Amino acid sequence: MLIRNRPGWWMPDSAATPREVFLNRRAFMAATGVSVAGALLPAGIARADSDDPTADLYPAPRNESFELDREITPQKYNLAFNNFYEFGSHKQIAKDAQALKIRPWEVKIDGDVEKEMTLGIDELIRKMTLEERLYRHRCVEAWSMAVPWTGFPFSRLVALAAPLSRAKYVRMETFYNPIMAPGQKQFWYPWPYVEGLTIEEATNDLAFLVTGAYGEPVAKQMGAPLRLATPWKYGFKSIKSIVRFTFTAERPRGLWEEILPTEYGFWANVNPDVPHPRWSQADEEVLGTGERVPTQLYNGYGEQVASLYSGYEGEKLFM
Ligand SMILES: Nc1nc2c(c(=O)[nH]1)N[C@H]1C(S)=C(S)[C@@H](COP(=O)(O)O)O[C@H]1N2
Ligand SMILES: [Mo]
Image (tube, rainbow, N blue to C red; front, side, top):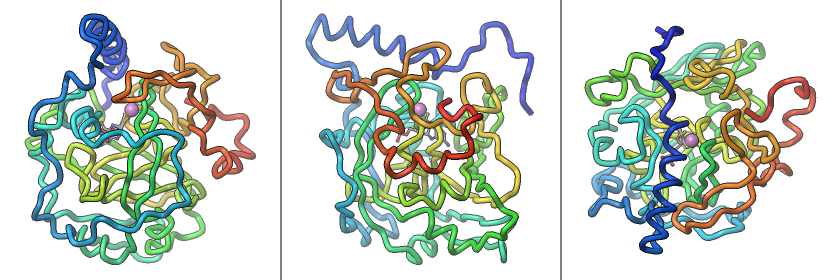
């Protein structure tokens, strides 16, 4: 599936886009004083479906132990500026992503577990207790947001799965349907989107499975009906629209690692002192504000997660 001999023109859009966005932004701001993210917002951008079968669960109570050091990014930015390559390799996929059919939606739990199972998304969500958490989100492209996610701790799903002791990792997979999601016709990406965590990471309290955002079911373009939020890692780890969790002894290879292992690794922990091979990670554009702020080690979550990495010092923890 993976095309190792790519055509000479090929480069990931994730590399091409930010520079263009920033250059355009500068030119646009110089002319008008308005940031480009604001300028790109189409009118009437879709939110969650009002007939979502779990709509009654929102808004969920906020867990106040997760505090932000900045304003929440207004919902309109998160609805209109997305990475979701299944619908295109640019940020304006919100309209096309409305083709994502989120019911029925089954989630499979398999691999090294006591008993494999497949659950309907509504059954899974109603087994859990939803809460709201305010998290920062730092994309590897050096922009960031602050989002009120709703969901449940990943540790609750691990408990439900009851992994066997030989399982060391959890591999997650997005849906595969190139008719619904035409980006998946781009054969040089090894679809479906895959990501992975160690079980220690997945059971760390910060690892959060997202079902909602901004006090309502999560919008399709943001990864409905179930996505990951691992705020101490670069955004590409936060896989969207998950259909499968596989517990395994083998370290999973994510879609980006599969394509460009010299730039995107398994760990992908945020670190301002370790530049991406093609750009600095020292600071980030705060979406919607036009500001740049210094990036923090583990995106500011070191107290909760740094201990996960003792014993792995020899590995590339920050790419
Ligand atoms: N399935 C899937 N998940 C994905 C992506 C993707 O293209 N496909 N992009 C990732 C990247 S690079 C980022 S920054 C976040 C973006 O989430 P947002 O659109 O809600 O900001 O989703 C991540 N999860
Ligand atoms: Mo990203």
